Length: 585
Image (cartoon, rainbow, N blue to C red):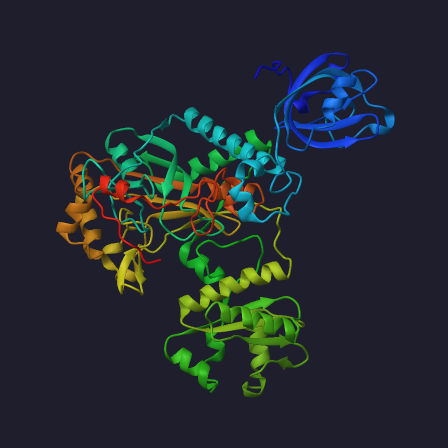
């Protein structure tokens, strides 16, 4: 089909073009028939322009316009004229003009859509994902993808200016245990053998340092066969960075400078650096999380000592068994019904329940009658509470109790409306544990990955007390990503593998290439990976990364548009050396 060449985008038709003939192309956003004149709002990615069809000037053209419907794709040629005073729309860039149509070519007729492009926020998410190409026509979605594009361009510009090489690493690679479950791909050429899709380019980027690249970055596609959630997808994009001959502060300063560059070039805002920094132990003890939201000041306080020896049986038992009692001080009086709702919430987290106290003329609490007469004064001195405050207490094993207090803290922050939603609170969390104990396997596993270098002095400590030269970047309580200084000698790498109960034979089978590289001139190095989707999600003020990915999966990993994953036929499976068997779902 031949049609006139577009001369201008819809959103660019402004008063400077008055009197000129233009050709615009796009989708019909709305059509209005005023009995004589017919108006259409024509939309493309740049905006909307009004087109008018006048039967007194072009009768046949007016008749043609009568059959137009929403989302028909058309090409319109006409003269740019001023709108009448009563028809000016100050909310549109093109609101002072309109195009008086001279010709229209209908490029494609549209059937009735499953939902209207103008139905912002009122469409079921699964329907939006099934017809994602229609959803992407909404200006809100276009602006999110444009924001993503602008940020990616700024990232590339920054790293280019700072001497980094952009290097693509393989998508088909080796199955290696790095903490997350991998997707595997069968090989037709090598029957019975499999590739793995990369969880991250971790090992490749370390090998690039062995290759003398020195400064590497990549916007890398990563894959993890795990349950999706609001800030996680089975496939995602991360900014991957690695450098040789550096320390922790080199990486942190680089990322701070990069983010400052992005904010200046994309938002024309000055981002204050350096960011605040907090050790893991302090973050967990004060916020019950390794990714604390520091936009509001509601910290956990350890008040175990207050309850020692009071003769309250269930608390005595917890303290005797090595447990702790933590408190959150709410600077207002919470009602009984509000406290009941919080208790229900905490039970959803797996806790047995909570205790509460209110500071009034007397101390109000379900256990008030069991407390000594001077307890209120001790409470005021220890927790710095005041008249009208409410204290929420949880007791139990330290880690689980503090995690629940951390969740409750976030719940209270939202409920009490004390979180500054306009604030961007970046935070470095450092000195993570090198290992963590996995209850399921009853073994120690690497908290980050097994290639993380221990903090100096690790040899003198027990496993659970060893710290790593690792760091995470947190924004508003969301982990943007993390990194570490890597192990670069075979001796230290073998020691860490031993502590993880990875045998020499298994280590050689899985990581022989890395162990060999560490004996052939491997430089000291470190890096970081930041989740691009999460970063865009926060900057776009979205609740889910699905809103900033062009074609995302559902929470169960389904691609509703392409209807994937799908079963393979017996013939297709035979190509890979498999037999078709009924799979239990």
